[in-house]
Length: 230
Image (tube, rainbow, N blue to C red; front, side, top):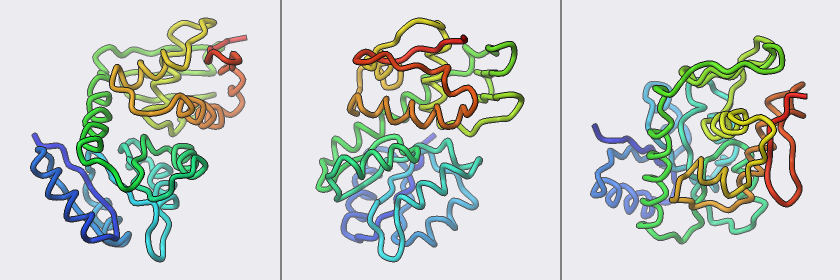
């Protein structure tokens, strides 16, 4: 079955270029030039991945990203940001909101295709068949690997797939320090297309969502992160 990619970009030439290229690459593509038409589509459909332009007239791609990641039925859809902004702060802001990757315009179509396929592959690799529940801190933290759910004190958390996988990895060996590069490999395999700083962004976001248990994710300066129950 073809994977569906939804694109929101107000530049018609880029939109048509992406639609034609990705169609030839074997994807089903839904293209939108306005936030309104894009959001109406999402009300009734669930694409496998979203390409989201950051700079939109009368709207802000970051706000749309924030909205999608805060909406439970849409939060797990991976997002790649398309942006003309090259500053690191803008890219980090998007990643903090839950975007999975970014591509700076002008970009290589082949590189974009590779990034799309890498994200879709890592989603497929996260197989619930290896599921089961993990419980920590006398039951305060519950991780359900079959349902992709995390609960703190019985309250369900709205984690992105990346945040879930980081927590799943760190809790697999409590007390063990995982280097940033090890975490990147766990997330993206050998197809790493993001910078190590991305790990810090997602961990910061994960800690915020863990609330009273945020201190269980500990930094090891210059190395990486570990999970501690104490």
